[in-house]
Image (tube, rainbow over all chains, first blue to last red; front, side, top):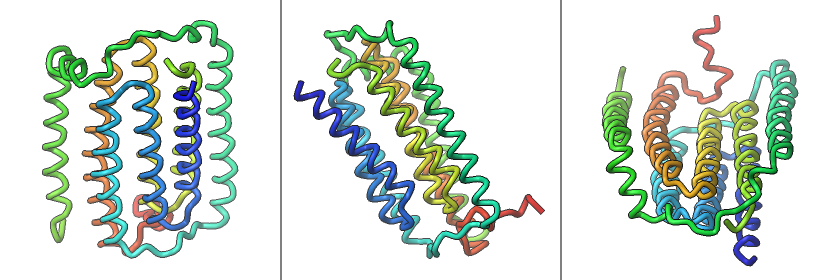
Length: 166
Length: 101
C-alpha cells in the first residue's frame, strides 16, 4: 500500500517536471528539471523491480546525457526564443489538437480493453542483474554486439563533427 | 505488481504526449532535443511495465538497448547542433530554413 503511494508521488513529480521542461523558457532550468524527471522515473523503475535499469537510468540519463546537454547549453550563447508569429498561432492550435487526439485515443483503447490487464503477477524474477546479463549474453548477443558497433560509429561521427571546419 | 498496469501505461502516455508537445511547440533546438529524450523515456517506462507484467526479461533488454541508442544519439545530435550554431549563430529552428527557399 505504501509502495503504491510512493509510485503515485513519483508519477506526479515526473509529469509535473516534464510539463515544466516543455514550458520553461530558460534551457538550463529545463535541463535541471529533466534531471528531476529522470530521478523520479528511476524511482518508478525501482518500484517495478527493475533494479539494474534504475541504476542505469541514474548513471546514463541523469549523469552522462544531462551533463552533455549542460555542456552544450554553456557552449551556445542562447538568445530568447522567438517564432514567426503568423505561423506559430496555427501550428500551436494544430499540434495541441493532434496531441489531445492521440492522448484520448489511446486512453479510450485502454479503458475499453481493460478486462485482460487487471490480474497482477505476484512473483517476479526478471529484474535482477543476473537475469538481465544472462539474457543479454545468450539470447540477445547479436543486438548487444550491434549496439557496441553503434557506439563506435557515434564516437567517430562526433569526433568528425567537432573538427573546426567540415 | 504494486499498481495496475494501466496506471503505468497512463503515466507513459502522459509523458510521451508532453514530449510530442515540446517537439511541436518549442523553437529552440536544445529544448526540442530534451523533449525527444522525454519521449524515449516514456517508451522505456512502458517497456519496463510490460516486462514486469509478463514476468519476462526481454523488455528490459530492449530498454538497455534504447539507453545505448539514446547516448549515441545525444552525442551526435549535440555535435550537429553545435556545428550548426558555429555556422549560423542561432539554434532557432525557424531561422534554419536552408532547404525551404
